Amino acid sequence: MNAFQKLGLDADLLKAIEDMGFETPSEVQEKSIPILLEQETDLVSLAQTGTGKTAAFGFPLIQKIDSNSKKTQALILSPTRELCLQITNELKNYSKYKRSLNVVAVYGGASITDQARSISRGAQIIVATPGRMQDMIRRNLADISSINYCVLDEADEMLNMGFYEDIKSILSHTPKEKKTWLFSATMPKEVAKIAKKFMTDPKEITVGSKNKGSVNVSHEYYLVNHRNRYDALKRLADANPDIFSVIFCRTKRDTQKVAEKLIEDGYNAAALHGDLSQNQRDLVMKSFRTRQIQMLVATDVAARGIDVDDITHVINYQLPDEIETYTHRSGRTGRAGKQGVSMVIISKSEVRKIRTVEKIIQQKFEEKSIPDGKEICKTQLFHLANDIKKTEINHDIDPYLPTINEALEEFSKEELIKKFFSVEFTRFFNYYEKAPDLSSESAGGRPTVSEGNTRYFINVGSKDGFDWKSLKDFLTGELNLDRDDIFKVDCKASFSFFNTDEKHTDLILKTFTDYQQNGRYVNVEITNDQKPEKGGGRRKERGGGKRNGKNFNDNKGENFKGRRRSDRNDKKSSRKGSRNKNIENSLKRRRSKA
Image (cartoon, rainbow, N blue to C red; front, side, top):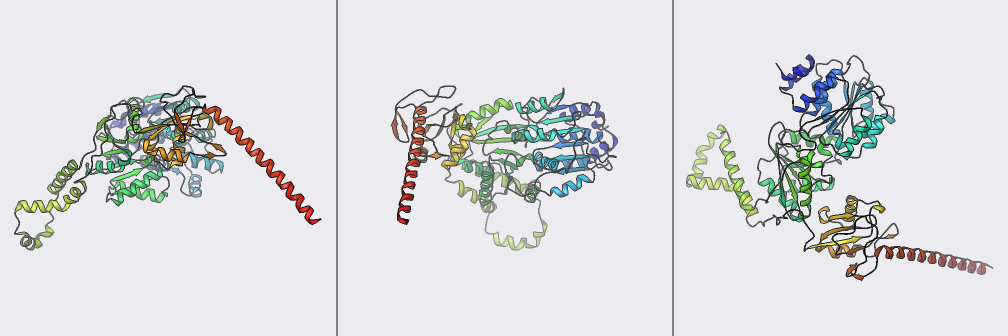
């Protein structure tokens, strides 16, 4: 007896499940399906990526849908078009024996007219991204006013991507009496907020602990100087010859740049990010699933559609800005009961983030050193030997053996082995023979400002619309530095602090000398304050610092206000002088005409 039968699923679904080879339900399926089949209730289900959440809501949803009616009865919202298409395909597989059941995918990057046409023919289930669904509703191309069920899949990621207002707007077009099923990997405050606002007394299911990482994934971090990050990535790949990985970058630009460099260096790599067309994304994912690509470099948003079971490694080329996102990243590996590894490449200033991630995933990271050249050469040599051992003999070469034997008869067995291995091995040996040690010194826990780092004061803060992340973006953009070059950003009300390596000091002071934005002066100063006063506002007076290389002993808030008043007075004088000049010139012209 198939274990799915005990969950209360009907014969058509059980037949489809058997065709797909499913035998035992996962924990989230075992807990969710009976509740959703037996009760008309709202549900919050928390489970890691890769635990079978689509089937957990898909099986009961299909069983509850009236396929004889062409009316739209269910809406599933997902964060990305890849995930939207993935869910749609899975639901079609589940419902293959349910006649007349139509599932339509609605997402950006494809013809909205074609999607509207598919819905008009009768779509009992719509799977949509929030942005495109909003467009459909605004154009009256979809009617969700009578749906019975709404599923919010990967709810935490949708909210991380800023879809809260879209979700709120979409749900305002649905009936109040519908049932909402929310599935999420983590439970940040924003997800709890949406559950409270749009759901009534929901049942809650948790697989493992909230926000906890998968027990099948081990976590490692490698401490390197930020300028050696790419070289470290290559070494980690070379030290794991059978690697089949997803490499995460923060931005589309970094994703494309890293993928291009890997390809130039001879790795089977490709980029996956939002600037690719749907056709390009499909081709990349097809190549990745068939293992033509070993290293897929992706942004967090694009990776939401990756559903591949045998990924051996997740490499965090950069940690995400939102630490909770790390759980989603590491969930790409260690699936279907297999072991996986999540690696993080970090600079010294980021070690504190590792401690934060450990608290969230409730697992410890192991600090490891980047493999040196000798280790990599040894690994590659034994990997080659193992490949040869497993290779099946192709007897088509038999007719050529006499000639080959004649050409090689002067060499002993040992010499032949050395020559054969040298063909493949020399490339690695030559590259790594004099390769430097990339591992940075151990940070020994939470880093502090030390020699080699400079701390700065800047006269903008939260009152100017900044938080630590947007201020960091502003600084890296203006200075043309990497995000890792700016660290320990501390945003107060009317001023902020940040650190850089001391080698950037001249660049920073030069850039912010007489710097204006929207008519306002932005000043950056070297400071010795490591623990600024809490609460923002005015700082203590202090001396001995520098303002753009000049000594100062004033209160900066007072100085800035005075300077702005002075600027306004200068502008008034300038305008007044200009008006007087214009009047004088006008009188001269009149006199000359007279």
